[in-house]
Length: 338
Image (spheres, rainbow, N blue to C red):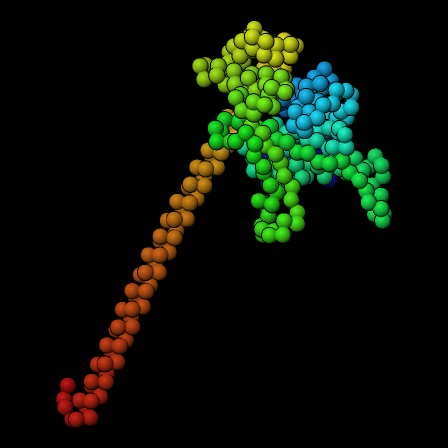
């Protein structure tokens, strides 16, 4: 069930706002603005990533086919064989469906990530569940309850990573089983995401087979290079795009989509700063909580130590008193005055 409102935040924050500001809900919740899903953050005005802008559009469909051929050692020529299955009416901030398509009985999902995320197998698993449901819906979902085997497209999940972590290998296999609370020694169930490092200079064989992907990788490297030399984000993007166009790096695309590309990167820079600040705030609060817990633990330890010493002193006093009373009894038995 979806609740429609224009709030962007966690589910807990939304609940708190709903409880505290019921009288303002008519202004904050408009049916046509944003779809809120408690399991993720969604908003319509979040720009597509440049990766998706390039490879999801009709005029660049051949470049998408080139990526598929490069990854699968195939030689498909007709780009019209690709059937795009990406959901376009909603863009997810935390679980966006970058690009999915059907080709040769394969259900393919390509995700772009600028930060390493070990949860990609789980996200892909959930997303493929939706894709398969829609796929079967076209042929009647009731068939899965019959006694004949229902054939489905073979899944392929690839994550294209271009973050700044220098320790990411050219190819990494991320497994859903790594998230299991109890390790499955039988390997009875597995779901894998193949993560490819597409930073400039990585996966050279793949780049040679897909020129557009190589140019995208080089352009991202240019943006980072110019960003190091100036703190002005607008100037950074202008310098990077001017250089790229002059040197034939995504030149046609950048001439046509210059404003959209600039806005996309500026949005991503803003999100990076927000997420960095958010993480720093969380770490600060966590450090404060850890210090408070340490102080409480120290106080409890001192209290326990004091109680132990008190108990020991009381025990000694009690024993001493008993000894005195016993000594008095002996003296009285022998008629010795105290």
